Amino acid sequence: MPTQHTVRSYDSELEKVDHHIIAMGGLVEDQLRNAIKALVEGDNDLARHVIEHDQDIDDHEREVDDLVTRIIALRQPLAEDLRRVKTALKVAANLERMGDLASNISKRSLVIEDVAQVPQREALRRLGNAVHGMTVDVVDAFRDGNADLARRVWNQDEQIDEMYNSVFLAILADMISDPKLIAPGTHIHFVAKNIERIGDHATNIAEMVSYMIQGQMPGEDRPKASSVVTAEDGEAAEQA
Amino acid sequence: MVAVTEITASERDASHADAVTIPVDRLPELGGPVKMQTRDLKLWYSDKQALAGINLDVPERQVTAFIGPSGCGKTTFLKCLNRMNDTIEGVRIEGDVTLDGTDVYDRSVDPVQLRARVGMVFQKPNPFPKSIYDNVAYGPRIHGLATNRGDLDAIVESSLQRAGLWNEVKDRLGEMATGMSGGQQQRLCIARTIAVSPEVILMDEPCSALDPISTARVEELIDELRDNYTIVIVTHNLQQAARVSQLTAFFHLGRLIEVNDTAEVFQNPGESMTRDYITGRFG
Image 1 (cartoon, rainbow over the protein chains, first blue to last red):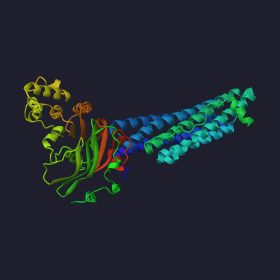
Image 2 (image 1 turned 90 degrees about the vertical axis):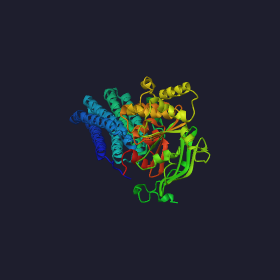
Image 3 (image 1 turned 120 degrees about the vertical axis):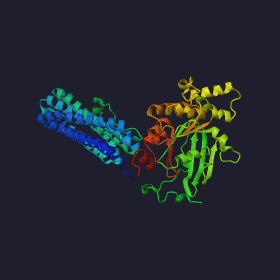
């Protein structure tokens, strides 16, 4: 199967788009890892580093947007090329949002005064590591055109939802038992939600990568855990 | 007889060596009536086989686009639909071509009458060196479609209106057609085709000699005409095929490789050859 276009400059334009997406993916991976580390270890310098570097991701997204617009205008892409540039636009938008969420985690890190008081730090680290792993895999799936890997990422979303729900309930229990934890606990809950949302964006990307490779989105509904849990759910779980 | 398998054995791209023309049971469901149909249609120019057993259903009152590289057989196939290949020396045709279920190659079919039902518009506008009026009136006159001048005037006016040309030429119907712009000449040729009330209009690269504005007018006209006519268009302009057609057929070296809903062909083609061709990876 010929993989190159007869007009080779077309290939180099598409490769440029891929290059920016992969670079963005790498930056998001770094930002997420650093944001979690900064929070858990109370490293404010690292948190400020994350906030400052969010702009790098935004710059790549703008480049992708410009390049894809140019390709659509000048090349009129069809079939797999059309799916590729459409996917690139959507992947870039999702990665940009993932970067924003990582930056928001670091902003919250800076307002939490006593990190030692932060409830469920280790649980957050585990949730963050799981979502970081999804992010790495889905960027690899895009780079390698690996539909199986994209599918595996897509299937992990339910597990992330369940991890988030248990973190949420644990934070709630901590705050009920010690009202001094309400302020840091509230921030930590938003951090956990941000990480879960990053997982959702990774799953969106996995869907687009499947579409790019196979020409169709995953056929069935995305596996999701219940998105609404209550303190009663936590008490019931404890009694069980 | 030249065996079908010999047609491209030495010419075909090695990476597509397993490509075959579409069997009848893999033709798409059209969801509407079939106007024209071909079954196992083969054509030879002397000993060179140009079509290798084409099966295709042309849907009624829709636009079907034929795409494919030069020499793939799409124009040859198009001309089989109204027997325009009959007069070419050394041509031999096998297989079935039907119009509303009737074999167009049956001895009882008059090719002239057939071409009134299945009209054709060519790549280069080819108006007769006559007035605008006489170009459109030519077909109705020879087919006896008008009994008096009033009837003929009505046919000329309605044909020019359907071709979107009436307002531009109504005050100069007596002027020579050859003095019109290229785009107007092509729409005049479409009006001339319409004037004999065809059921099917075959178009062989009708916009290849036109500028973008004239092309847009012809494409808009094609879109309007499909309310009343079955249209088959050969085009090298993939974007045009995507814009004007509902069904797209991809030909390669005498074979029909893929035929499907146009949006599907251009977003997610089923065959690797189609994908390579429409994405510019061919050869």
